[in-house]
Length: 460
Image (cartoon, rainbow, N blue to C red; front, side):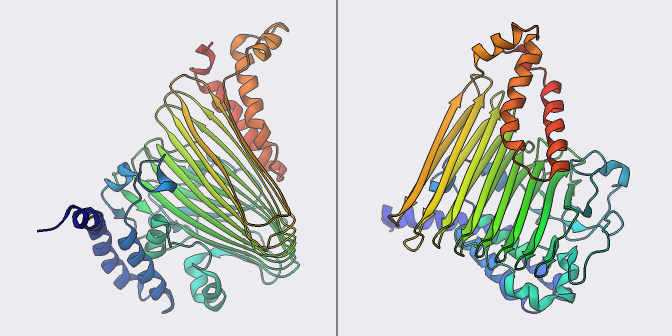
């Protein structure tokens, strides 16, 4: 007869084992099929990933990092990973509807996580620059990728990163050599076409900016269907000494879909990394962002905007680790929540003992358009050094009636006045995008979405 304590210990283990079974069975089939396509060093990484996932299981509300986000709907989905490439009726014309599709840029297109050569296009670049798919690069740049792949996006506590490590098939591989500038932005366009529940893709991106290099990466996730599919993406960035990288992720998935993303960046000395996370789609979305400032004088700026309505949930969970002295980090996240939607912001600044002269700021501002919308916000400082400047804060509010009155007194209608104020609130984040073409496109897109929302004009 087992004690209550024994039962409490074994019950989660039994649950995790049951949850992991379909994934373990799929992994056995996937491993045999993928063996001929990838270098031998990849398989220990994959096996470690599936073992870690089986050990962790899906996070629950008892997990501190997930206590505001219930992933039970993801856990209940049937697991239908997409193992083979299919164009699935996607055309160049259909891609034109997506953000950044009209920009002059290198463009890599992925359909359900698989590279589409016929829909992609790149310009000639300087010698040594790599703009290609990860699956292809594993055969041409295996030694370079081996030094970096899965070394930054830790799956020690992240079940979704572990699952991606086990099942990734393709994604983008970008490499910029020493002191090289890529003039045009690089656009990574991930298109989902799944209509069946549980159709799953595991995009894996590796971006390496060597010492003194410069590049801009635009990462779009969008859909041509309305099915309850699942996107589980991982992006690893290595920003070398003195390199300058801007990364803009725009998530606009189906309103029935689930989107979990892990973004890890490793920053060298005097490097500069700017990241923007724009979340507008998916029924449930989560961005796990980890930045490690590993070299003295490194600087990062993290900007975020989440715009939700209906029953959507958008979660941003961040850890910025200051590991060396004289590093700066600044976080600015704004949320606009409508209907019964929910937002989650959990930002943690971790300052190691060696990170003297740290300057870190963290701000989260939220605009609730209805009484049913809500936000769980938790800015957090964890400081082990004594010579630092660190601040954090969060605000939650509704549209300012005085500002509405001011605009209406100047002949502007109520509907337009509301839209102008909401757009200005979003603009605080969008204007921080350095890539002018991307900034202007997102600004116009947000305005169009606000005008198309009939609920905004009806709220007083």
